[in-house]
Amino acid sequence: MKYFLSIILLSALLSTNTFAQQRYEVSTGIDILNRDNNRSTSIGPEDDLQFEIIEEGSWYYRIRVYNSDGSLRNGDFISAKSNIDNAFVYANVINNFEDTVAALTETGEPPTCHLCEQEDEEATQEMSESCDIPGTTNDWRRKCRQLYNSNIPQAALDYALRAMKLNATSFRTNKCFDSQGIMGPDHYSMHGLTANELENDLLAEGLPNKCQMIINDTDDRSPSSGGDDCRGRMYYIDLCQGDNAVVQEDYFNLGTGTCRGGGNGFRNGSGIRTTVKGVFFTHTETFDFAKNNGPYNEARRRVQRAGGPREATALQLFGLQNTNNLSSSTAKYIHISPYRSSFGCPSIAPENYYMIEALANNGPAMVLNWGREGMEDLEACTE
Image (cartoon, rainbow, N blue to C red; front, side, top):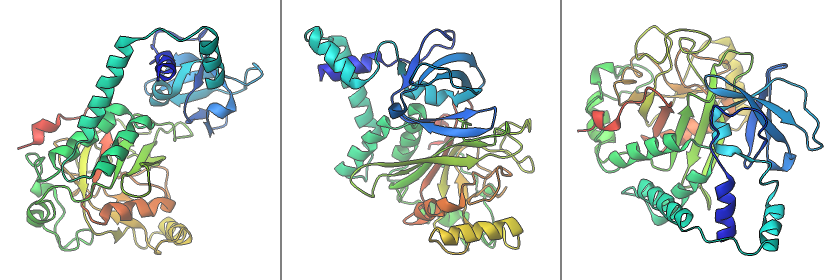
């Protein structure tokens, strides 16, 4: 345990004022983008690479990459700040686990760090409280705590779990829920569902599907290439399948009003093609999106080849906050897409159609579009 705590002490969040000269390596897998050829590469500790930070961007760090033999790798590399903050450790202090253990053994048992043990206990307690959600099993809560060892930004995870806890047994985040912003029941995406039925039937006893959820990190644009910043990092989470928590990382598309210099930011409105931030609950029935659209016909074939129905799988999203409560009426669904951007929908790869189906099954379920800035206080929309 003490060896483990000593290694944890070596991890540090990077100061934005300390660039170059300091070498780092990754403790978990991350993606880096080479802007010279617009290719994204996944790397892990086994690649034995080292890094220096040479510049800070709005959402990324520009990094210098060294090969295992110490030679400089050619390319103009960047990686999202969330990757850096969550995955980098000092390379000149800890080179690999075996060397660290050997060094600790040679110098004797490390001194006890009571403060470290206290901080570790506090962190464990905080995780337990976040995952102590009514209506869940002990096994669910165990898997929930495992999420804190993933690449999901902790602030995003905390936000999602607070929203789930508030709505665990009754629909409490309903103060900003705008029934006027919900698509009419006759629309093909609604399958006859009314606002009253959503609030007082599907959500009467709280959020039913606590197994699967999606967290979209609007700050992490590392899946993008070509400089358009139109793809963010998506985390698909399943706390019910398998022996351990499932976290699958991929991309989601942002709206062109938000990316590509669209200039509309994350505004909640009609006709501005923006991504909107906040908590959404889903419908329980999927639908076939963008019929009679050529590129979507190919996307349908991709879904079929991946084992799904020959459909462009889509699902209504109902925004619960002032930042996103018009998402339904402005048709910002979650759906599969053949494109690199959207009109504001958090669209995903066709091969990930099953994620949307899982959200709908036993739904409604939760989707969160998160960012470090612009998130409304959940209590502001809670009765």
